[in-house]
Image (cartoon, rainbow, N blue to C red; front, side, top):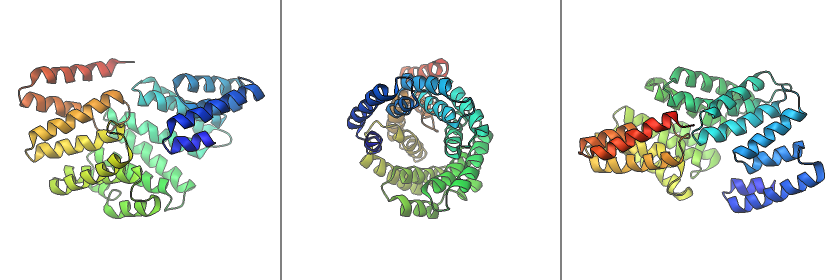
Length: 309
């Protein structure tokens, strides 16, 4: 538990130290193939640890046990973040168990639905993403009260899915300043979830052509990210992409290339975590200024990422 608290505080080295001690104690006290070990392995993280934890649970539990669904969620999410398409298959396996598990685990079911929306959105399957987010929101309404932060984030998440589908009027019923204000009152003005919500509003403004407002809003979200995260954190991909497109629309081509290029460089490190892909627009602008060789390299990276395991 201390290790997980340190993880939440971003103190990775201390977290790992405590979790490895917990794993050694669990192996000594309960055996290396125990449910206690599986729990700690998931907390430590990493594909191999998640695989080992899944094998333990599959060996000791019924096939419909919700803890197996949670193992598939851990494994699928980690693979997806690393750009491995097998991650989505793991999430789907977990979803099938979560939908029928006994006893039900609504929270794991909710987590899986959330994380399945991202690959669907990246493929342009917006109707599927919206369906998943609506189902997730219905679960939230069953689990949480109306001002719970996860409930508020769920509504904003549905708005984001609608925005990506181009359904801007519907999106605006979920993404607006009052919704952000409610979230801010609950979790505080510097929470990353607030930064994400503010960026969503900025992207909505950009798509509506409200460029000055969009710039101000997106830069506000990036200020929160900058105060909390490292400069190459995956959280910057989407706001940098939005800001780059605002730059282009306002005739600031070099600023657009800089921001889209930075977003593309971060995306190369974290290929499975963003909703927006800066690379097509980055390559297009590189060609616009005559940097054809650089554009071809970006396009080559795009092609290789489609087929990479």
